[in-house]
Length: 326
Image (tube, rainbow, N blue to C red; front, top):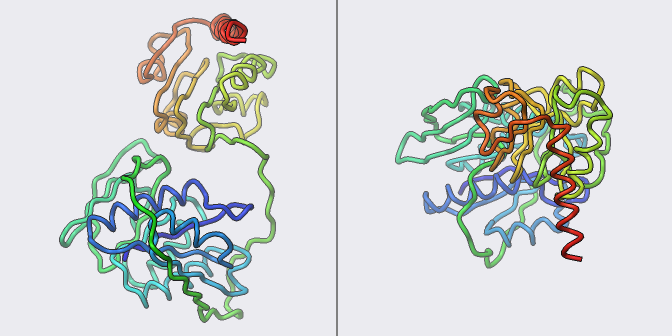
């Protein structure tokens, strides 16, 4: 089997990153001719039904009081115990900080390497090939993964999965690992609730502004445009450094990596750290006065002009078309 590590949000629903992990695990399983199994922490809830619809044949639930605080070391130890017992050909998880650390603990326990930040995994008869991000996403590396169990983490924005039918039934196994409470480990001591609604990582459209917006007040037209097109507002690092927008709005290597259907980069030059954060967008529209700006040369489309003139005109045209329909 191919084992997918899945996570749930605060409402108990499967996270978007976990859905991508499952999709990749399904495609790998089909190529290998084996089933897909999932592993999660805690009680079952509605997870078995959701996983069955995604073609998952088995769910392994890790349950232990030390796993309740979400510490990656404990999760890694528990996952290592499970993998050692199952010996699946591959274990796939999302490439996010806590999960990567847990996967590293598990891989070390099993005695195999871990390939992080993978954008593609290609199984073979012996050695597997992976493509993964290096240097913060600036470089893509093709590497060989050769181990009895292949551990890999998957970057967000993976290619669309092939279609699959629902599993006839899903087997649920409760696994209570033997974890020593006396061993010192890092633990989670506080959780902070994210703002409700769409976020940078989930919005289909992101309207972001950089130095060219000029001030905190200049983002008003970006907010208006984002509201009209069903998106959210983002920013570059200079906007955060200048106090125009909070860090939670920052797109980039030191902010949030996004993969929307459309990214509107307004007054953003497109430095490397910012490009790493938005390069997985399906389409990019750049608005900039500099036709040689990196964001302009890399964008799907570009408008050469001042954002203070272009965006109000775009907003006015959208409102006119909305009024005409009504």
